[in-house]
Image (tube, rainbow, N blue to C red; front, side, top):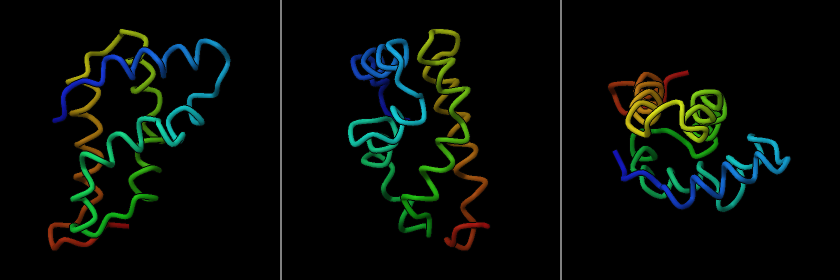
Length: 97
C-alpha cells in the first residue's frame, strides 16, 4: 500500500468542493488514477490495462470521496480498492472479465 498522498488529496478534495466533477478529478493527468497507476503499474504484467484499472477506480469513487472528505482512512480506502483490483486479476496472470 503506498503512503497516503495527503497533499494531493487536499488538492483533489478542494477541486471537487469548488465544483469539479469527482470523475474528472480522478481521471485528470494529475489525478488519483495516474498517481496510483504510477505506483501499481506492475498490474500490467498481470494483464490489467490502465484503462481497466481506471474503470475500477472510477467505479470505487464513492469510497474515494469518503476518504477525501475524511470519513474513511487511507488504509480503508486503499485496501478496499486493492481488493477490487485483485478480484479482477485472474490467478493465471490475465485480467479477468
